[in-house]
Image 1 (cartoon, rainbow, N blue to C red):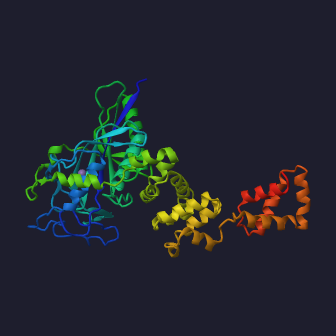
Image 2: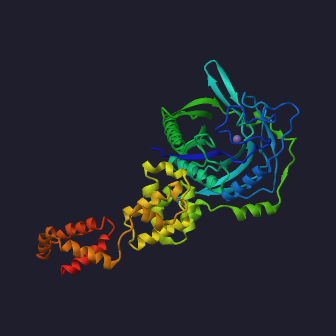
Image 3: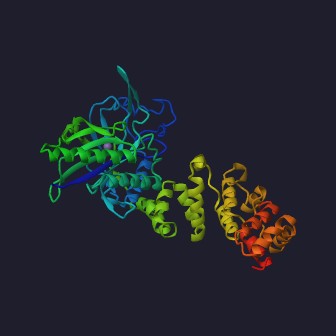
Length: 473
Ligand code: MN
């Protein structure tokens, strides 16, 4: 039986988190705003209004390009892409069809696979329609939001890699700080092109496009579904039709929507109201110098210490990674990373992820107390959680540990006194005799008695040492 090889290319629209829109001076973050409250005459296309390019959107595009390991084109231009739809009052979208700002680059997946980027261009978003039975409502809050559209080469050959690519793109863009990366609100939307061809074939098969996926899981499932559907068609001797298909998350299926129009339908023309962008090389150099640490940096730094599984989990939380990088000392990184994953990422503490993280000094203080056995691992967790109490933000670790009463007694003289008092008690005599007679397990009971006497503050391993010494074993 013929084996079919899938090929996938992904286009991703990333909403840039600039303060204002691409061509107007109104608020660009409409997530908590009333519909049509962040709209300027430019956005609803009042005749005679002229677009004015937002310089920060250019900066963000450069930064996004550098994060994609791309060449930055010092000269780029805008074009008009014409189509008619109620969410686009101008009748055209301003985009970069022929001279994009971001050139060829690549994204490296966690397993080292490189997915090439063909180019990425800057464009404006359209508005949003909500359909209400017999009529539809238009919200133009999103109209004019700057988007970077990242176009991959057809380098992906499995549903799992399609998901990994989408996820890595999300990480790279959020680490670069160019987007809020709020997937629920459509800050990143994936269009997935899938085709299958018989193994060994030099030509790609006919592709379909599934548009506007907004989760990594839906990217993976949509690709999986398309690979199966197309393979079945070809096995039956039928043809795949080139078309746009919609994704139904509830049924896990794609359905045909419309056959793909040719590019000529859009009547592209150069945008006459905005001059070409000519970037100074210094701007690119500046952005390169200020580019935050990328996921790859953290992998190279921490995979040896933490193992790649833990690193991949923590990479979903950029502030945690930045905090770990602050600690510098590898042993401290390991202890704190484990606390992050076991305490902070536990479901019951999920809300803490939105809070301010403990300071570097607090965390290093915690590591030191753990290392010196002044805190048990349970006590360490208690102190760690207490760091998130707003009243504790300025307190040092030792003070917090003392207030919680979890500092372990390590003073051997003091411990010896407690041990002596326990050994003098009538109720421990039998256990002492049993232990001396070779019943090793009884030591646990004696340690327990000492712990009780110390109100839980004794260091159990030190107690055990002293007990063995005293009982001559
Ligand atoms: Mn686009």
